[in-house]
Image (cartoon, rainbow, N blue to C red; front, side, top):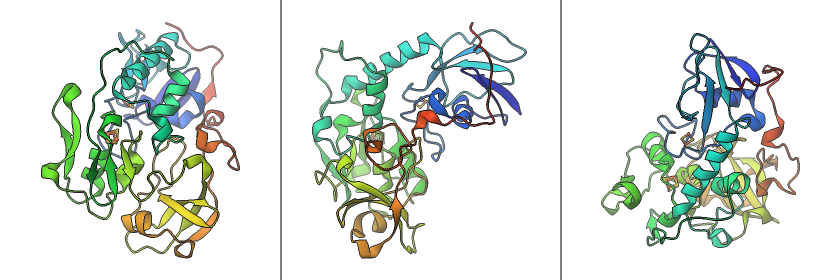
Length: 324
Ligand code: SF4
Ligand code: FES
């Protein structure tokens, strides 16, 4: 076991735990934001730099700080490590720069984007972004393409987090899409124009942190904040059948997987549940879904249990965070 202190909270975690996972065990505002890491997907993380933190003390034996900020999603803790996230002005300043960098090639088309209201980049920009950009060059532009019968790809909005590629790799049988080319020419594409048409392909929509992969059965039907998310289940032979149905009156506008406070899917769902069961008689409606994160979809919806408010009682708060 290793004892780690993050922003003044101390917790004991298993050896090999990353700083990010240790922070999630503590909970609350001190948890670094993520755009590419996804705890359910092996190998994810290390692409976006959103989760950078300062290691003020490397370990009990080595009390020196690490020379640069590190990606918390891929740096394991060491016993006696002291980490600063929101208590480090350097981290907060760098996070602003990361948001500016992510927005270099991301269009500000939130008013027409289906992901608006539940977009991780929108939330990140709101919290950490600056209201100006120093980028004068033209943004990358791509045609909108269909990938499979249910999914549309807006490559303009893609931040190349690789989550969809890992999803296709790990939860469907056979990867047929990936990242082509390098640097700012990189793009998501299906191999030789194959479409993604296996039973779990719709999950790429849920893992996409922005609006690059959208649900063709829901596109432009409604803004998400006008809908009521309800926990629902059905007896499904392919997946757990546990989902969230997004309702307007008695109509189901879309079906998604259930997501936790880090906006990660709890159980991946199959395409039949997601795309073909849009009638209330298909589902047993359990009741309103708690939205456990700070986002516009949590506004005016039932109980507001915000991500920033829950600290694990096991984590001990020390008087003053170490400063190096
Ligand atoms: S399409 Fe979405 S999930 Fe896939 S790499 Fe781009 S931003 Fe990430
Ligand atoms: S979440 Fe850690 S680098 Fe992207």
